[in-house]
Image 1 (cartoon, rainbow, N blue to C red):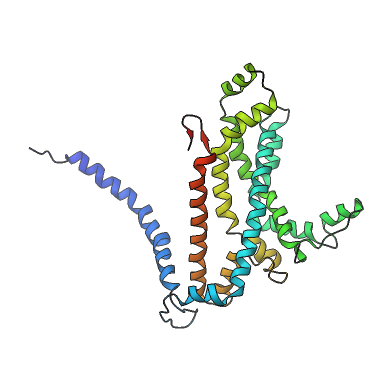
Image 2: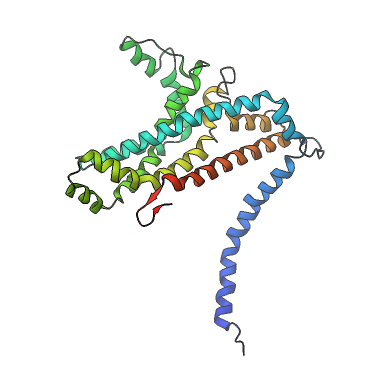
Length: 301
């Protein structure tokens, strides 16, 4: 004989559904709904203020075969990502390693390195516009004082993206905090085992610290990959995609198509292509992680 739910369990189930309903509705209305709508819109020729016609895959065909700025924006974004991701991860790891040492005033140093991460992006951008200024900026002043040639920085076609890669190191605070938490979780008995075997600081770093940190490196790599492919503020505020479209990053190009040229259907197709690119790259990173990410309890992932 089957026994049904009691009155108390039914009451708990109903209250559970009631409390879970608002976030589920929010997810459907504000996330899942717009995602599905954008895919449909990407197959139309809709422009703001006019009627739309269903065009199938025409937008995607135009993007891949007739739009030279698509390749230009994709190249600029990949160039920036290839430069900023390894540089940012390496610098964040080294800073976290130094901040993990037992020295006087450690909390002050940690605050200093994390401070840029909590400053609004707009304020950081305005600061770097001054730093990069060819006439009275900080970097050229330092170069002149050292007797070195100056640069056009973000105002030169060949130096614009390298300058923004340099600027990206300013915001490594969040990665530093994650690396620092990972370093503090490395078991001390592993270091003691190396000492028993006569190993020094270098062997501890290579054979204990680096392998133990690979899960944290993997996590920061995925976040950096997703973040750099969506760079926008620098192009929007500092360069407007110039000079000569050198910093026409993908998301800025998408924004320009949507809100300057009002081509919502075309911009939606660009958004879906970006989504697929990021998803494929993320899957590649996950797939290759089994070869280089190590976990203490179970070897490689």
